[in-house]
Length: 135
Image 1 (cartoon, helix red, strand yellow):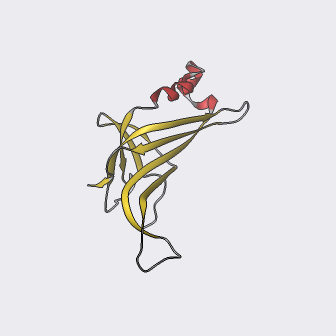
Image 2 (cartoon, one colour):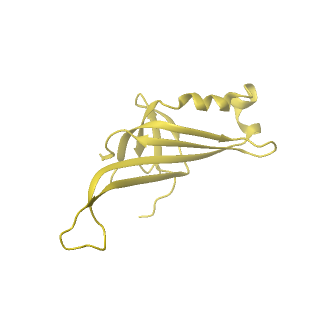
Image 3 (cartoon, rainbow, N blue to C red):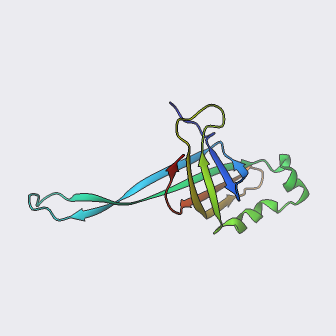
């Protein structure tokens, strides 16, 4: 089954506050180097702890966003959410996904790129705080 960017829902206090169309999910495992009695030239590893993070991109067209038209600097308030914890739920909002993934993450980074005459671009990076588990 092919995935598209329509799978991430951001929850705050069990209420959906955002859905995404573009996101990048990264899960990685720590590698711990071990000494080998049989191998002198090449490194060997065992796996350690895991970690995960999600990067979400967005585009904001200044003239079409109602809040920005009312409050021109409203998009700058996004930086105030850094450091907060959110529940991230990965599920297919269109069809059925065999496994729904869910985890708590801390918003680590909010990056806003605003260039005169262009769409505002932004990136949010969430870092997993605990396990990413299936439901």
